[in-house]
Length: 255
Image 1: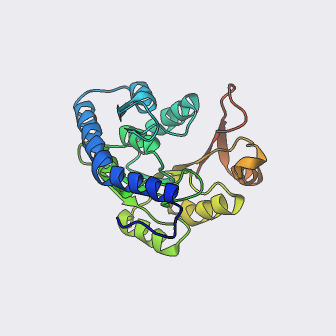
Image 2: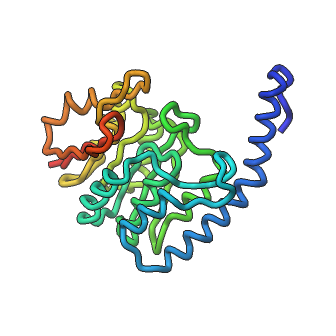
């Protein structure tokens, strides 16, 4: 935790505070959060209750940066509809590209089978969502219930080595549900789709987040890829009527 003497003093102080919180404070909050999750794992739950939980629950001070939460970057109505669709399939293998705060990862453990494999791919420091720090890994591992297995891959989804890791975890099986919410550039989402959709089983589901047209300043171009490719598949669009400048989930039913 030695300071970089070439950095401006204010940046050095910020870095020191961030590192200190990451070593001592946040791991303490993670343990408290995991304890809350353990209580929930022992209860019967409704999916809507779990959605309300991820959007509202936190531990620590109610100040940004001083609490741990798993609030997803989703529109509640949209993720609720997606979960309703996927829940009917009772997926045994789920793969998520882009985990960020962990809210959707948590929700996917709720609709997956008790012995499911759930694979998360997330790039530390990624442009869209920023990834998650290592100290959050134990929290995400605690999402599993019963005999589920959670595999956390903190690497670039576009790397062939990452694809090989996913294949290793699959052990010859196929993905039931693939959620793509990582690199939101046109080329980025295209690569994720082309590299991972072949790993999805026939009759599986592929969902892409942020298919709504976003302001150019956001750099989000998922809608371009979606509009070019959706008609090649049986698909469904989930776009909230309340918000049309972000969000939106595109669902593809793989034949």
